[in-house]
Length: 231
Image (cartoon, rainbow, N blue to C red; front, side):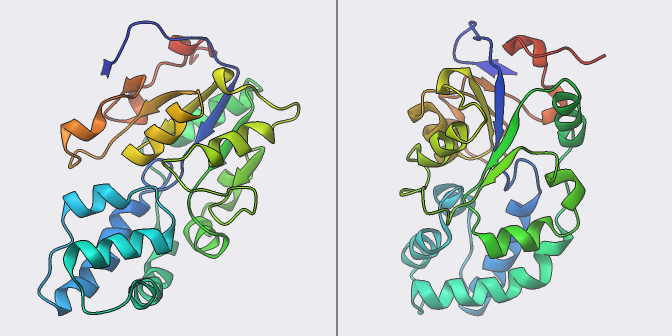
């Protein structure tokens, strides 16, 4: 466990990223892009992956195409990767500790929501086996939401998400959970505290800046941020 400072401020609302944080979909993204890269003798490295985590789909495909010099357009890469993802996304599993925390916050009437870069179609694929779990959230802001003008690392998705609580939540009262560097930047830009739970493969230099960094959701102590303690 590490932090940039020892002072955590109490919060009243919690916002979760989805890919790689609630669901193990980041692993499935790697599988899908590597399957395409294999045809051209290219490697979908963690350097490339970390630069696109949390970005909207077409933006991510453009970066991957350019970084690896793939002989196809970003649109073709996106279309092909989506065909693979349609096959494998329904197998996405919840990450360790996620169900425990979300159910705990729900039980104590802490308002919770999701802000994801995933568009509506891919969201439905990824969550198809977890409909009851995602029904626990007050609302879910998707990457293709018309009010989200700019994707992460811009703060739009988190600010829109905070504004949709009833009543709306002020950013400084929101705690964000993220796994991606772009998501951490977005949360900080929104004026929110952020707990980062990065993949072990992520370069240490990309995990700086978060309010708190953990290896797993199982390590999280709600009391640090003034939330009800686990029983």
